[in-house]
Image (cartoon, rainbow, N blue to C red; front, side):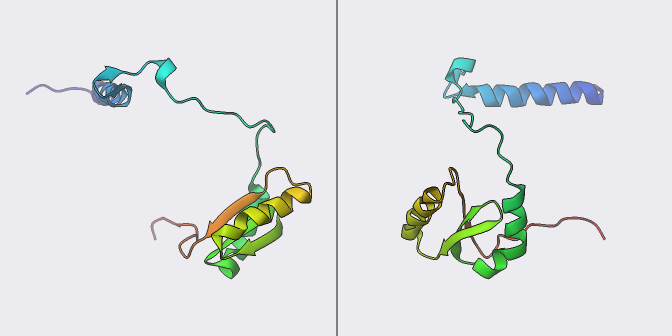
Length: 115
């Protein structure tokens, strides 16, 4: 029986994962074939105020779409076809990129831990 160190095992696993990530349909994916990502023209976006608003108020809007500008509610609707109108309203108020989210029943954060 061959004994390998934990480091050797980790290297073998990482090489296997790398192989699985880079081989698609029998051909090797080069850096040029990976999907391109776009960076925001406004730079890094801080969504802390939106997250805090969602934590405090999401249960009041279960089953609805909410459109936020920071910690301010621009509008809400249960009809997905009306979301574009709410985004247009936000943009008319000078908000370049409003935060849009559907509040589902299971939108509450998941807390895990041991007792």
